[in-house]
Length: 427
Image (cartoon, rainbow, N blue to C red; front, side):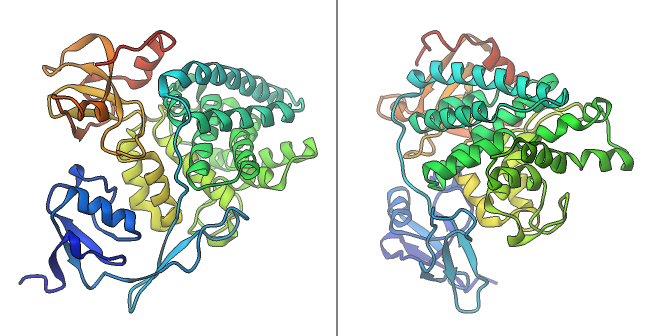
């Protein structure tokens, strides 16, 4: 029987609150992240009108829009943001974000980002060794680096996020600390956090795992599953991290809380205290989401990392249980349809790695091409700006997202082998 609640309408008749269940084209040909969504604002109506002639509306799931609680940067601990309200439909939340543009180009931002990444790596290696030896941490140095990282991301978010793909299995803890800091700053900026709160988030994220230096190396680096006794030891690292930072003196409570609570889960299944729901601060919840994302996309002693796209699908499926769904949806929106580091195939058959997120044209990032149309390695990777390609006579588009390591491509090795300080070839 036909679905009586599903109605085909022209895009000129769309209004806020309607639930779009299907487009007149494939979802990947549209700028929308989710297959099925309620229209939240006039911008989404305009986007639908630009890419479609008609859509299918689910009347049962359509809602009355009530912008009754906007996201406020006055307190990150407050529950975020715009709410949906309906007659007989469960309430849901969605974060309203701040619009922004990069101040400099990706190529211009990359050398500074690389130098800063190197400085941060040197600092975190030294800090972790200090903790291992029972020495104090240079908190002022950490705070300065977190602020510098935030400034760099404001200039151009893509360059520093591109470098988060530089993951080494034998340096997991230090690289993970840097990546979680960078991605937390990226997400905080996306959510519109003011400078002071962004700095606290970045500092807490950079130091969130210092407690792991108290975990015995045989447990920390074990290539297989931990025994129940070993898990008890490992699960103490948040408390150890909190204690280490607290003894430093002068560390902001939000930073201490991130170290203590970044493994808590929304349903109460986390550790060390089994907090749930609003018992977990927004600072800790943001870092916990990113800690999980970077962990599953990294090669570890006991598993190979999955692709960014696979990780986001996993997180979305788990969102209702382990993380607040609105915050996960916002993180997905932050990373984009094609997250940086994703392997993609063009309709021409060429294969490349996503280097940037294009906030205005989400289907048209900059790629680093590595395989030609016959799936043969290019002598040198080449940059391709899909947005510029659409202005030329040769329009190309992304056909599909590939699984991690498709065609034997190691994204991390490509980045490490590339001379990123040299001029990048553009096609």
